[in-house]
Length: 254
Length: 261
Ligand SMILES: Nc1ncnc2c1ncn2[C@@H]1O[C@H](COP(=O)(O)OP(=O)(O)O)[C@@H](O)[C@H]1O
Ligand SMILES: [Mg+2]
Image (cartoon, rainbow over all chains, first blue to last red; front, side, top):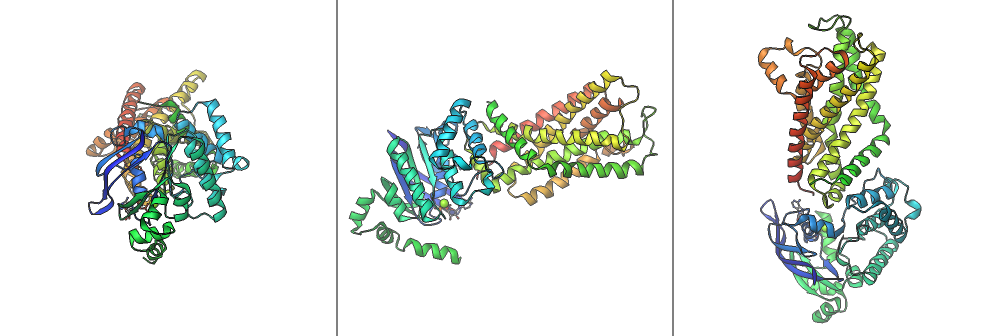
């Protein structure tokens, strides 16, 4: 059974900005699926549609078997999300943020306590649990958000650039949590990133997305083989026409 | 469909943040207190027709200032939605598997509770400036009056929290919100009979006053505390409840329609 099925999904902003331009793909149960693309490719917009935050312009999307436009409540019950930008309440403590979340998802008091303690220790924040989030570092916030996304035991997890802007040590740590998660449970994950190594290391299959369109979709090995390239970096260059680093620089100059 | 645990946890979040920002309580009480001092001493000789004997302008004014306190804090608490949007937390709330009505109610009740706490602080402080309950009240009537005041405080807060939320749901930036809210809030305040009897206003403006939810809240509090009101208390209660329900409906509708990102 597929955890996610997307067909001809389109999202336009203000009529003329086409952020997502007719993408289709499926994510299998237990799979880690990567959306790899430069800034502005449409990755976040896609996740926002899948998580019911945005209404698609056309096309269809099913998450855990439920239509994201018609059956929002059931979609919401089955997903966890880690947003690209921090979405924590900085005037609450780490534990309070998790408690808020667990109560919103209807987790009962006893289970709540157990799970919060468990996930806090998983992301190595047990010691900082009673500290206000405004005093957390960027890496700590990210880890807290990953813990939060897991508390309700979602069937599908969305990770929007989970290691963006983190130092390489914290990035490693987060990669390890994600790997552990994919090996030890049958959770399905969609992860967006513009780091090649990340997609290569974590994902079972990768869709390369640019200007709202999927330009290639396969396992990392097959992508490399088909393009006759040794690294995903080169594969990306071949499909998109420019290197991903150049795109980043160009965006900054704007 | 309404989820009580979601309403409760949204309310709890509001309480925790309120108690962690104690300066907010002082700040919010300071403005009506200043009004009270200047108006109260300035117009102490003002004749209020129909006021019971032994009462002066300050007795008339304090219920109005309680209404003002409720109105201001309530309307501005809608801004918390815009801050949540700004800091990304609104997305966390919007993808949760709870009905949008529950979210709106949680926010409204959270904002109302903080408003009521501020109102009580103000009420207590007003005795320092010479306010007193109606002299003929016994202990029972005094306690009853206090409880009635709490009910009116709650209804006013809910009404204007809901109005604030309705505006916030249709806006994206906090500055625009403040502008609009000030624009709406001051007429509501001045046309509610909070500082001067409505009977003194020109007839066509009186019509607006009678459509203003705050009018019945302030009048009800006067009835509760100094037993001197335009309408019977049950009538004020009825109309205040009516406005509260209508505005909860309106806020839920607008909030439901607003996008999460
Ligand atoms: N709310 C919005 N209004 C208008 N345009 C938007 C909005 N959100 C995103 N866009 C545009 O849609 C495109 C895709 O953005 P996004 O999905 O954030 O890309 P990515 O996450 O891949 O960096 C960009 O051109 C962006 O400017
Ligand atoms: Mg993005």
